[in-house]
Image (cartoon, rainbow, N blue to C red; front, side):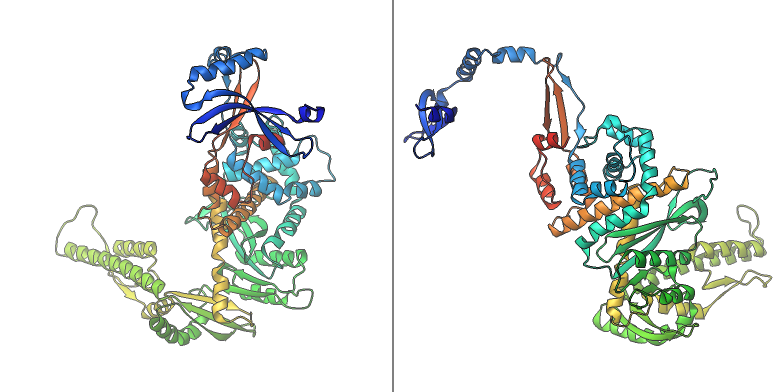
Length: 591
């Protein structure tokens, strides 16, 4: 054998089959032919027919090879590896964290943070700590101390768990909020091209976030205000969120808990105009942002080419009674069209506001929603009628000398009780107790009933957009529901609330971390949808979380590492998320 041939030779075990179908175990040698340089294989020795070999025979062959090589035999290895002398480390969650980490790097968030904070020199891995906080929001939202407990059960590639302390978490949050605008601008610059060629339509809405603590701080954001989630006045702060038509969050702002919604619009719009080279901006917002001052303000803001900002804003029709007359004119057509087609009907009418500007009133009528609203109102009216009948019957009975349990009921007491019932059921607009009457009586406002009847199933929008028909305007507005889903994701899956921070900047930093987590969640949602997966982002992460990294320390001191078995479903999720499936080698390289 030539030197070239000996250098390329390699022995191995192979299984062959003869003409009768029997399988044989052989020792073979692979080599590269010195002339043709093509790989070839030649037979060295036969070890016997495979179905005739017993376990003892195979163990004997392996032990013979191990002894010849001067290594411990199988029996010696089995005796050395015992549960008593082997250390099994707790398993660490990896699958969901692996997916989020890869998306983090794919979106160049590490470079964005490094570029934004490049003027500072830090004694700890700021990017790694911020990444830890964001991943925790998506994987297992915890308080800052809870993040440290979570790290004990999580495997974060590229993050030294021993270098993440409570002080580092707080310091990273302080650095993050110092550069909030620059970071948000860089983040949007990287991600916006993935969603939209250019920003044209922006959706804006507000939500309230409950907060703990009774202390007062300078510039405190925690103020008593009316909550959007539960009835009543609560201590809270307010978050305004802007996203594109494709669902990408592009900016957010934190306000005091008692801020009026209409007072937040100008700053947001001016920020959008400053941040993006806008050729056109259509702001879509909910009814809480409607006021003549806001609409005039939006129309006064000019884009670089001189074009006015456009808007589509919902109308709280019960509050703006000046729209009752055009709605009364449109109502018959809407009802007739909806009954003929069995679908939602849309039409519009010009309206002239008090400021003299003519705008479009777009009205959509949903017959199913109207029927449901009227059925619910009938149910509440029937309950009110029964309550009134009971009070009248009891007062009449007392006049005849009948006795009832409890204190006797007076006419004044009956009025108060019935008024409270109307308040609780929302019927006080239709039915009113007559306060001047000496006896218990009430009156029904027929005009209010007719107005409410016309409002059932209606969506009213005010817009100055001229090149989109009424149906397109309604479609644009209904896309605003996606921002509501974003708020629900922030509050539930990402645990934005409740907040336990006191300092205003820490509250803002906590919100920014949740905003970054929401951005990654929307990227995941987009990829899953494009791949045809029926899994939501949080459901996908839940399924991937069962992939864990295991570690075993042998009596010899050697460590063995391995991953949980990855199922076909989990591989499909990794493919849908455009993330490579983890292997032990890849995990070691990322560590």
